[in-house]
Structure formats: structure tokens, C-alpha cells
Amino acid sequence: MVTFSKNPAVNDDCFMVAKMQKQYHYKTFVSEDQFLMVLETLRGLRESDFYWSAITGKEAGIVLSRQAPGTFLIRESSDRQHLFTLSVKTNTGTKNLRIVCEEDSFHLQTDPGNVEKAPRFNCVLKLVDFYIRLGTSGFVYYINAGGERMPLMLVKPLYLSISPL
Image (cartoon, rainbow, N blue to C red; front, side):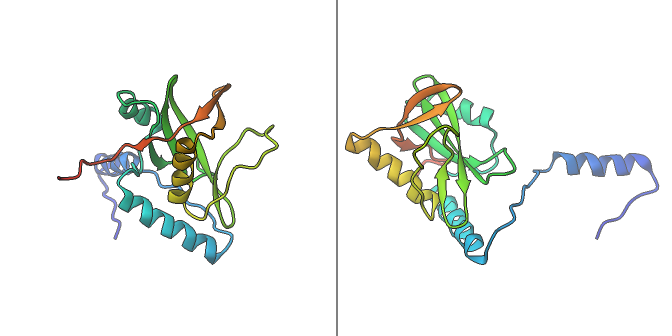
């Protein structure tokens, strides 16, 4: 139930609290299958403990700044057209890569001029696993971020909490 007071100061407080609360963004799904794919991915991400949810790109840069190159996390995208972003520490700083959700798959957003399609996966965790394994196999996938072309190296996730021994 929502109530309003005749006292304008009380209403101002209510609006201030509403502004301070997290702004959710919603995606229109093209099918029930896509909706279920996203739900399953979100469940897996929450269990992974490297899904940092609603932090910003700037905040991701701060938490990754003290980490080794190749350290990464997944977070909500600040771009309302996308659900998730991969934030990864590189030799030149933190890079934020959008994860595109298409009808039946997720992939990293590529440079529009790139003729090669990025690999697609039905789960963001599978996408992350692919790029981790790719790096350990000696193959390199290049990304364009901020006008720079650099290798994407995912080495280890940055967990939200430290697991007990």
C-alpha cells in the first residue's frame, strides 16, 4: 500500500528514498525459452560468487585495480539494452565488455567492423569457462576496448567472499 501525506516534507522524504533505491532495468524477452535461459544463467551466476550484481563500471575498476591482470568479475550492465558485463583487469587497466543476450545465446559484444562472430553460449558461465580455457590452451582472442586491440585473458574470478578452508 502506498500512502501520501499532506505534509510536503514527508512526501519529499519518500521520493528521496525511492531515488536512492536501485534502478532495475528490464528486458523484453523474445520467447519463454530465452526467459528461462536468462533465469538459469542468473541462478548460476549467483551461485558462482563472482557475480557482483549492481556495481558500476567505475566501482568494478576500483575493486579490480589491486588485482593481477586476468582477474575478472561479472556484473549487471549499466547499459539498459544489456543484462551483464564482464569486467576484466588488463595490463592497461580495467576493461568492461558487454555480454549480448540474443534469442538463444550469450556472447561478448564485438567491434562492428569485425567480420568474425564471437562464440555463442547458452549460459554466461559457459562463456567465461570458454575464455578461461582458451587462454590456457595458448590461443588468444582479441578484443577492442577503448580503441585498443588487446588479448582477452581470463585467469581467475574475483569472488565476493572468501571461502572458509
